[in-house]
Length: 71
Image 1 (cartoon, rainbow, N blue to C red):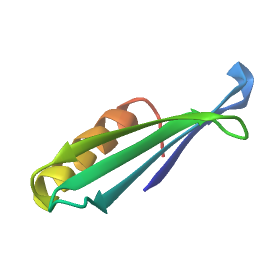
Image 2 (cartoon, rainbow, N blue to C red; image 1 turned 90 degrees about the vertical axis):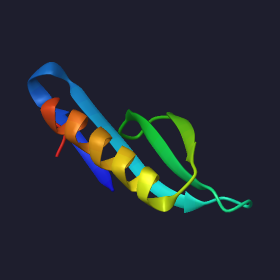
Image 3 (cartoon, rainbow, N blue to C red; image 1 turned 45 degrees about the vertical axis):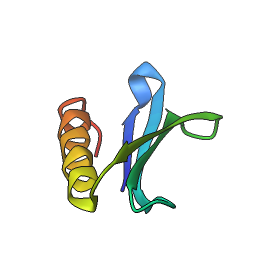
Image 4 (cartoon, helix red, strand yellow; image 1 turned 180 degrees about the vertical axis):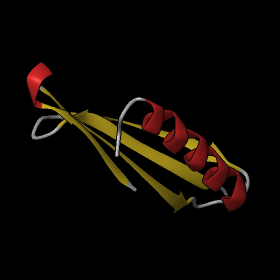
């Protein structure tokens, strides 16, 4: 899932990317990457016991980002 937030008046060009990936030991990771479009980024991986837990976390984060004008 790739979200962007662009506000030219405030010189704001941001993105937020989320991806669910399988782990080596049967766990699931939610990889998040965010930063300014065209620049370096930050990355974080949160690990969950099941794919459903990772998907629920992704939905929660998507809702939070939508409240902050990411589309």
